Image (cartoon, rainbow, N blue to C red; front, side, top):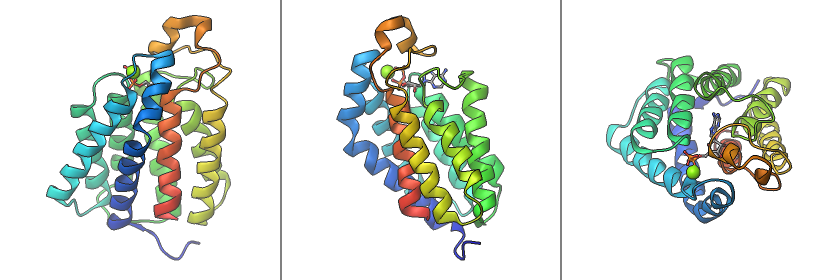
Length: 209
Ligand code: ADP
Ligand code: MG
């Protein structure tokens, strides 16, 4: 069992690290979305995460559930396009699963992660291989669960699985979202949402493990 559970400060650090990573990779995300979408994923998510960081700084939520739900609500209200409601639902469901507690152990964090991924499916109806963020997030949740109850090891396994899932979107033909309008022309490009989701898991491995 991991000795140090995930507390509210650690979750805040995770969200802050993801916001910084999205800002750093904004142009890459935009370039990927310009190939198979409308070139707004980097700007969308960077704007949303700036708003999230500002909201968390002013409100200072005191429980895991409150922090994650504030993150989700802010993304839903500030990010247009597909990814705002999808990431928003991810964090809202994570927050509901986490509950009004100050710490999450490895199992509780895994259950919250799983609930968040379930929210993305409930909202976007993606299946594995549709070339979406789900192709990075679903293997990440599976790897987390398979890794056992050491938080750091589980998060590293999840991040590595997300990276592999992101890379595996390249040869796929998109079946959801804007990229699906391109049909076969979506083949050969990395999915922008899977790319930002891999950043989210990498930030978790750095800050929570
Ligand atoms: P939009 O496509 O509306 O411009 P973004 O560019 O911000 O929104 O986000 C695009 C990403 O959203 C895609 O790369 C894909 O990963 C994800 N996405 C789109 N539709 C779905 C869906 N139905 N389920 C899961 N993810 C989706
Ligand atoms: Mg877009």
